[in-house]
Length: 577
Image (cartoon, rainbow, N blue to C red; front, side, top):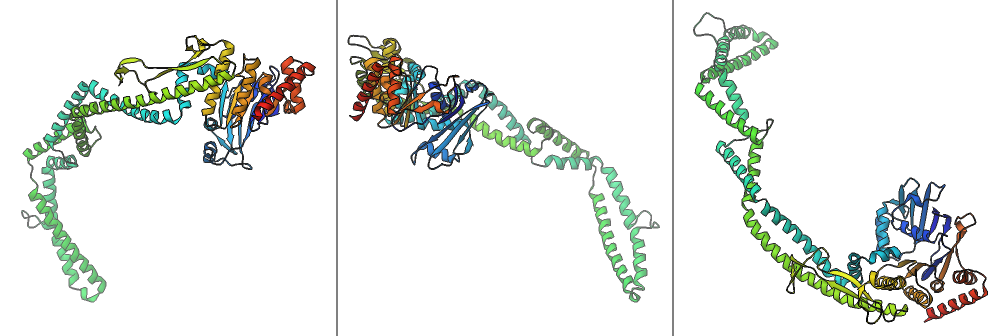
């Protein structure tokens, strides 16, 4: 991991190894920046205050070795990431203005993707995490995580039924509480549908009636115009002397027919006159028929206007001023469906009620199954943590779980009790500690002293870590407030965990650091800046000097060096067994 311009770090490289890596250094040297850098790489919040003074941005880059089939590797490749010599490169940039960018495998990605990868890559255990675990609300989730599939499988089914029950109950409550509104809606729909049904409108009918009303309203003028046009074309019986178009056309046709055999062009024109004669006769006949059929019928006109008024009323109410009768018909069809739905709500209420009862019974069975799995996991967890505490110089301490339910008349009936329930089941979970024989178990926040609490929480973290399916664990000074033999045992426990996973520990205890497979030290220069060479991997001799400094505050104290060498020898012997 390379860190640039982050906090007191100018430019430094942190080389982590398989097994147990310890990170040490004097207070204020920048050890915390190692933890912060990992947090940024894994999607943590970008704080512009982390950017080193005088720099415009901080950059953290990491190189990860991931096995084929790793969920994190699969997710990264889905996002377009490419491997570099079989390894995945990730980076995070934070500007002094607060902007943040992320890259995975050479591709720009949302910061949220880093957080997704982090869930499969690393488990962070620090004093902040301990404080979260002290809250009962977190302890139920921790127990479920430890329990694994024995809780996850029934809890998953429980949550599905819980969501369905919530939806059914919400729909049922809505139908029940809105009965009056639904009845009013049904009445309005029923009235409107009866009104439309009585009128029996047809699509396009209003357009046809408008044309008929226009014709009937001007019948006299239309008849006079047709009669006059007919007389002009075919003659007026009342005035035999009047010249009409038909007579003139007949004269022209006879004049051409007399000479058409002398010129083909003239013969063609004569034929065209014949065609005009036929057309004129047809138009004249149609005009005569139109005039005969046209009748100024005041009764029919009144009926048409009345029908148009009824349709206009329907259009205003059910289609809008610019609507059509087709929209009125569509409204009636949709209204019929909605009315059937409203009228069927009573039956639906009965069906939903029966469904709700069945779902509550199923949910109660699943809740009982989840609770049983939690009780079984709690016993195993408590035994595992108590074993860890015995190794951490608390041989008589006992950890247990208090799993309880809260009575609620509106809850689920389980084994004769009606208890409250939620998305996580019916259980309230709290971790208890009895630090010595005869002591009453109490919540761990109240049942342990400061030093005891650190050991208890470390034991809890180690047990949880063993249940985590991630390849890397980071412990950030969870050994605070611990010393002496307990500190040695802490180092021993972390070394044991490192046999099956990569473990990174930021510590101030030499007893812990001595158990590391690799020891990194963070050093500042005289001007208070951590440079590229400021994070270094220690040789055996350098480890003795650093442990001596941590023990006695003096790097070259003979007594301190002797103690440091003894610690390293003890740790090597312990790791060998």
